[in-house]
Amino acid sequence: MTNTETVPTWPKIDALTREDGSGEVTINGTSHPIETNNIDEARSAILARITDTAAKMQRPVRVTTTGPDGQWPLIVHPDGTVEPDPETEPTPATADPAPEEAAQAPAAPPVNQVPPLPAQTPPAPSAPLYTGPPQPGNEWVRSTVAHAAEDQPQSRRAARQSFLTQEQVEEPATQGWRGLLTRTGIRMTPSEDERAERADVQAVSQHWPGPRTIAIVNGKGGAGKTPTTVLLAAVFARYGGAGVLTWDNNQTRGTLGWRTEQGPHEATLLELLPQVDRLLSTGAQSADLAHYVHHQTRDRFDVLRSKPMALAHEQRVEPSDVDAIHAVAAKYYRLIFIDSGNDESDPMWLRMIDQTDQLVVATTTRDDHAEAGALLLEALAERDERSAQLASRAVVIVNQADPKAVTSDLARVANGYSGLARAAVTVPHDPAMVDGVLRYGSLRPATQRAWLAAGAAVASGL
Image (tube, rainbow, N blue to C red; front, side, top):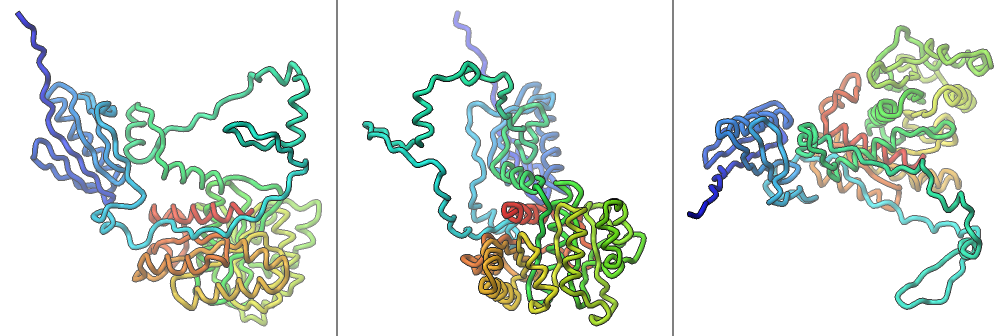
C-alpha cells in the first residue's frame, strides 16, 4: 500500500498598503478594505486580519504584501509570527516609481540634489610613487615606503592580530516591512533609503574641533532665510546635542524672534553688546547667557534676537559689534547659524561673511528669489579669494513655499545652481512652515527628511 502525503492547499492572500494608511487584504478573491490613520497602523491591521485567517485554518498561510517598499512574500503563522517565504524572492521598490505610484506621489520630492562640482585634484602624496614592473594581469602602484617595508621583517606585535579588533555590526531595519519583521523577531537588514537616512543622521550628529559659523543669505526678502536658519539649527541640535545658536544679524526688522519661542525675558543683542567684555572674561559662565538668548525647549537651540520693533537707526550695529558678538558666540557655542539681512553692501553683512565657515543660500521657486541668490554667489566670487571659496562651496536650499509649485519648478531652480554651488537640496511645501513659530516636530515626515538631508549637505562642508 502506497502512503500519499497530503499537501495543504494554500489560500491565495494578497495585501496592499498605501502611504495614507489605507489598504486591503484579498483572500481567495474576496477583498477586505483597511482604513487607518497611517501606514504603520495599516500594516498592523493587515497583519491582524491575516493572523486571524491563519488561526481559523490552524496552520501558516502565505501572503504577498505590496506597498511603498516593494513586494514581499511572507508566511504568517496562527500565533502572529511572520517569516520570509523561502520559495519566492522579494521585489524591493525601484528608484523610479511605477506610473500608477507616481501619480499618487506628492508634487515635491523630499530630497533632490544637483550634481556637485567636480572634485579638486587631490594633493600629491608626501612620498614619491614607485611603479613596479608590470605583471601579467596585474597592474599596480606602490609607494616607496610600502615597497621598502616589504623587505623588513615584521615585529611580533605587528604580526599578531589584536584582540580589540571588532567588526562593526549593522543595526537591523526599523522602517517599512523590514522594520515590521524586525519587531516580530526576524532580523532584517535596512533598506537603502534607511541606510541613507542613517548616514545623514550621523553627518549632523558629529562635533567638530572648534566652533563653526554658518551664514544663511539671499539679497531678496521673503526668500526663506529665517525658516532655513531655524530648521537647520533644529536638525543639528536635535541630533548633535546642545551648543547651537541662531543669531539675527539684521539691521532692519529681523524676524527670527517672531518665528521662534520667547524666553522669560525680552532681551536682544542690544542688551548683550554692553556685556561683551564681562562675558568674555575668565569669570563668566555659560549660564550667564540665559539673560540674553531665548532657548527653544523642543528643538534645543538658542536664539539671539534683534529688535524688529525699533527703527534701523536705533539699533545700528557696526562691524566691530559683529566681531564682539561673534567672539561671545564662539566662546559658548559649537555651531553658530546667522540669519542675515538683505543689504549685501552693509558693513555688518560683509563682516558676517568674513566670520563665515559655510555659506547657505536660501531661495524659493520664485525666479526673483533664485536670481538674487545666484547674483550673490557671483558677486562673492569676485570679492576676494576667501569669499570666492565660500561661494564655490555653498549649499543651496530650495524651499517650495508656493503650494502651487510643482516638482519641475524645484528641479529647475536646483539645477540652475549647478556650477555655482557645491550642492542644492529641495524641501517640499509644508503648511507648518507658512506662519507662526517654527518647530521641527510639527513638520510632515517628508519635510523633516528633506531638512535632515539639507543638514547633512551643510555638515559635509564643515
